[in-house]
Image (cartoon, rainbow, N blue to C red; front, side, top):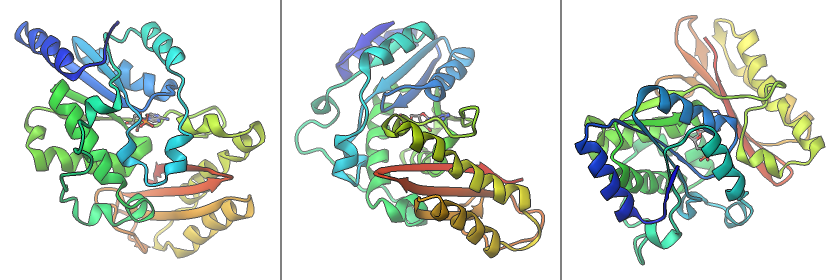
Length: 283
Ligand code: AMP
């Protein structure tokens, strides 16, 4: 695995590889890697000649400074995991490489209603930060395929929109990988590292609440199901930001189900200081 810290060096290297006809897959991450991240790399390795992973804890996507300060960093272990999984290139830039002075959140991306819903409404500015870093990374890596996880469902939709807005979508294909879970059902997440063992056991309630919605889905009003799932979480000590049932294609809230509309259930809730998110396609 080759490690790059400078954008220009990585860009030059990849430019040469492109001229040799090599196809590139790219998975951006914030590190503290787990099997979910590695599954993105594995998907990339199947479909590309070269696989690039980036690790960058992006300051502009944290609306809560304490969350940024406490974001887990396990770089030595990450490097070992990536090497063992056969990653070709790791991009590990320092902050000033991604944000030369004064370039933080200069541009505004027209994300429309997508950034007013769910994560957008509870984490103001979050998706602008996501777009800024993903745009910058894509301009450096110029991959053929971009790998992202369904775990961050709304983020996948935002990045799809970013690809349209910037025209990058003409050459970059977004590939969405399924959410990897612990045996218990808990979605793997870097933030799980911040949970105590007892909290980690309790955290599975998010998956169970979403699964309750999936198991009990029937045509008609969805309100009661949504309320039951919320009550399951608050009853277990979570501070719930939202439990929502939405159209799987648009993320518009769904109030009634006609038995055909494709739906997704999404949740975000705090366990202690740690905010966890998850989602499940319902049908
Ligand atoms: P993060 O490091 O949390 O920003 O995540 C980097 C990428 O890994 C994003 O595209 C995530 O959606 C994806 N990812 C995170 N957790 C999982 C998981 N449990 N299964 C699959 N992909 C994941």
